[in-house]
Image (cartoon, rainbow, N blue to C red; front, side):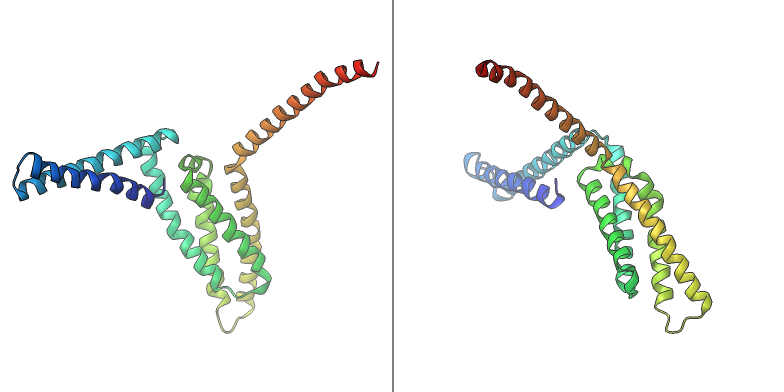
Length: 218
């Protein structure tokens, strides 16, 4: 669940409980104003924390992750978000028209992998190479390319470096595409399985229908 939405849900439950507890403590049990306020706030905090633990446990159970695994994934996603910010900044700074499609592809693929992992953390294990290696490479290359491309005067050596960097980024874009495909490979396999099941059902239906039609023709 989205962290902000989860916060709203927990607050939506905890706040009314706090108010009701305060009213009961003050008017039903005749506690003092300050005592009632303390009891109500304490109860609200406990309810909020219990809901937080329940929602967290339910989320981990749904995605079949331990708390330790999720902490590791969250840490890597936080670092990846910073790297993606650097990557997007460097891609926007590049003014080379010939590399527009390449930059769009890099942005689209990296963003897609990150979003899928953020929504379904277990996908991280199918994108480890992306997070631990390929993302770092594309960020560093893009930043260096942007730096060199921004120089007002370029000599033969700089132009050669720019050419080699463009070629390497082209190859790296293909690697990123393979990363994306690997992340969704289970979905593709599942879809193919469902297609095969559907085809089998259709063929079975045809086989059971056609003999009846043939009998009517006779």
